[in-house]
Image (cartoon, rainbow, N blue to C red; front, side, top):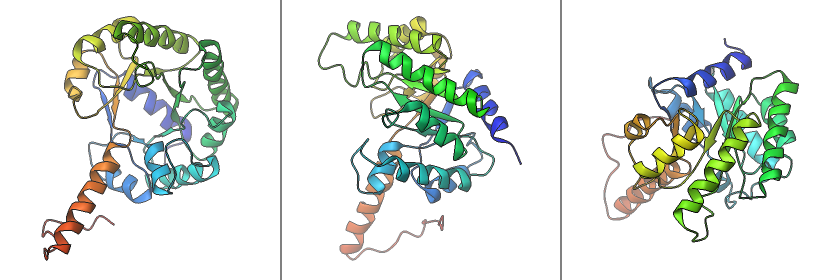
Length: 258
């Protein structure tokens, strides 16, 4: 049985490896077990949007206690695999939120800046790093900047420059990676990696994005998929329901994964 420190160190090594870390996000114990059962799975990432939706909340609106309860259930469900959690913007107190997440067995997290003033965002990163140190866990912070998703129509070059400035500041404050969500083409990705650092950029896989291998070749460390896996699952559920209403049958290929 691995320790929490072992799992944190394992997650850090996965980010530093030449191969891109592929994380298919989960939202409850059974989705976590389903992904953990695949031999290719090296770590587990939760999707805050998906957990919130499971409880009937909008993205970022779920109470922290409820979010952490589910995150803890996911940790318990996947055994020795390291779990990195989506903790939104830190629920008002990033350091305390991470301290509580560590108490649930989490070893890494995404925390977003929502384009708050840079000094405030850096202070949040510092609080998270300090929380990990106080708990004795080498916590892996994937510091998210919303330089693209909250760009508000500004020129692309301005968003790239903002992401690089913020990314460098977060790394200097102790973050391990910089998460830049958005549909990033090869040129934008190359500029981000050059500005932030090789194996220091984390991206999201959305329709229209590059493949994991293409991001890997550009020096990206990690790709995750946010709420999209839940959307795929819900699409399949709605489609099979429509087929059943139309006098169809359950497909013979269905596997008993629950």
